[in-house]
Length: 235
Image (spheres, helix red, strand yellow):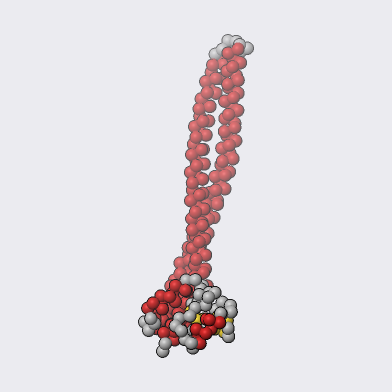
């Protein structure tokens, strides 16, 4: 068996192994597990954002409530001062009335904002509960599906191990430098070897120069396609 014959046999086993591994990666259970995992991560991110928003709202509520207490204290103080004034028409009384009205307006404005925030908090709380419920269902489905996939993966792993072992055994029969060349080409195009199809490369289907065809016929060592770089194999 020539070097290229051995490499061709290796490639056949290599392609079978790759095909099995790719199909395993595209297993419906695995694909669904990945989608569920992404969904769970997305919902966890949503919950974190809701938590941060709730904390910010609650901090604002406490601040507004403190401001209301401050303004109510001022209102009481203004009212007391006005009651003690003998001349309610004086300039000082007018200024106090203006400040009193400003404090009352500010309290009303804050109360309106608090009412709006209360509605927002209720909505966020409801959204948080909904997302948590969905996340719980997704986790339960993920756990159940993963148990089934783990059994499937175990069988697939055993078969993949056998295929890799068979491929590696064939690789031991290939010249080390030639095998490395094969692997380097595979990084660019696969399969790395191709049979000529008439005067064309069986890989890229481009015409081969006459000098390449001659080299193949005369078995002049390793011959590559000038276009795609594949190793040409002529049995």
